[in-house]
Image (tube, rainbow, N blue to C red):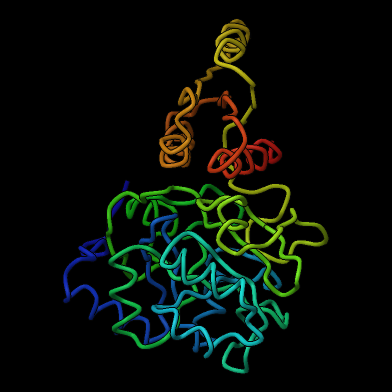
Length: 315
């Protein structure tokens, strides 16, 4: 645990917002709270600062970033050819854990998109993030504030623990309400695809958008699509029931290894909110194996299952 003097600031104070704006305009990176996870933020119009994000995270430069905006009315500045179903879902679910992929305008720099003609956009549902975005009158790019492929941060302290002085300040907005990254939907065709599961389900999107949505196919073209991701240092083993987890715990103990169980007994909301913190705590305690009981599919369960499968694939 470390906190360089004054590095974590109360995000609800106007003085903290003012300092964050000053830092961003000086091409520095800040830690930003959202309802999903904490982001590593830079101004969307500063290629030099955006390049720093890739360096700090050790993230491949062809891996696109999500653009965060303050208001639905700003969407036309960054995206074009926006379909009616896209407008419907954005107006309904924003601010919220929904990222839409659209055709970009010339206002979006290549560094954000990995050189693609599309851009990923969302409006975060967090008062600190919205306050900053509104005051900036600009967009922010803000991938999760951790080293690439590792466990995402859900508190301000996680950001400092991971990134140290690579982040100038962190606006503290408390523990993230949802705890897993946003749903990403590709809206560049008549048959939209979900590229990443998150806090908004496929059925919710189909109902509001009056559309049929398919699961993703093709190459990795959005954050979180790689097979190995969200990975702690400890080994993650997936089990399908509480009973199986207890049985495995006994087996592992007899091998002289340490293990612990992550099981929220059907409470997907609590599972999502605490998953990343629990994986980090296991690493802090130098646990060898985490036994994660898979939640049932549907809604947030799909998002949790996706993160756990990718965490386990990194073993």
